[in-house]
Amino acid sequence: MRNQTLLLKNVTKTIKGKQIIKGISFSIEDGEILGFLGPNGAGKSTTLRMIVGLSTPTSGEIEVCGHSIIKNYVQAMSNVGCIIEGPDLYNYMSGIDNLKMFASMCKSVTEKDIVEVVELVGLKNRINDKVSTYSLGMKQRLGLAQSLIHHPKLLILDEPTNGLDPGGINEFRNIIKSLVKERTMSVLISSHLMAEIELMCDKVSIIKNGTILKNAVVSELLNTQEVFWVLDNNPKGIEILKNTWNISANINGERIEANVNLSQLPEINKSFVENNLMLKFVDSKHKSLEDLFLTLTEGNEIV
Image (tube, rainbow, N blue to C red):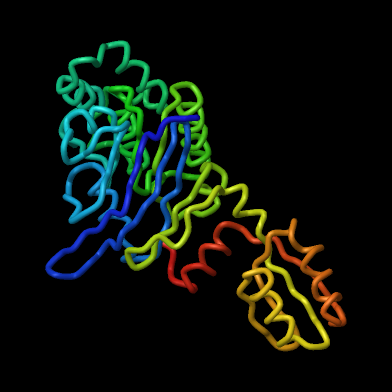
C-alpha cells in the first residue's frame, strides 16, 4: 500500500461569513498525478492556497506527507514545490541568479541540483539571460525548475502550461511523467486543458461551488460512455435504470440518454427485455474527460 503524499479531509473555508469551500476531501498517493478541475469560481484557487499555507482552513485537515499544515507547517512545506498564480521571479536578474537565490533558502540544495533542474526544463542555453527577456513559456519553465530544486515529494502546479506552444506542452507532460517515475513524486495540477489532464493524470477531482462533485480514476472515468436506447416504453425504461441500476437518465426526443459503464450494458439490456420492453435501438458514444466535465458541471465554462 502506497503512502498518502497529500490528504484533505472535510476542509471548509469561510470568508466574510460566506462558506467558499464546503467540506471537501481528496488525497494523492506516492507517485500519482491528480488533475484538479472546476469552472470559474468553483474554489480551485482557494483550495490550492490553503494547501500551501497561504490561507488557513476554517475547519478540516490538510496533511502533506503525514504532517499537518497547521500544526507542523515547516515540516509539511519542506516537502512541497509549487507554482501558484504564476512563478515568482525577479525580471532584472538572470535565470541562474533567480535559481541560486531561491536555492540559498534551502540548505540541502547543491550546485548539482541547480544544473540538473536547468537541463530538465530545457533552459540550458538561456539560463544566463535576464528573465525580462524570457517569453511567458520560458518563465513557466524557470518557475518549474525553481519548484523542483529541493526535490519535493509533492509538486503543485496552477495552469503550468500557460504560454507554451504544442511542442512545449508535450515536453512539459513528458518532464512531469518522468519526474513522477524517477523520484516517486506526486503532482497536483490545475489546468483548463482537458486533453492534457486526460493524457497526464491518474486521477481527477472535480469541484463546483466549493463542493467536490467527483473523485475518480481517469481510466475508470473514461470507461463510462454515453449510451442511447429507443424502447417501446421509454418512461418505463427510465424507471428501470433508476431503480435497478441507480443510473440517472433522460428522454431526448424518441430516445433515452444516460452515462453508463460499458461493462454493465449487456445486463442493462437484458433487464429491459426481462421487463417486457422491446429494445428497438441501442448505441454508444465515447466520452472524453471534457465531455464528462461539462456534464458534471452542467455546461459551465472550463477555466
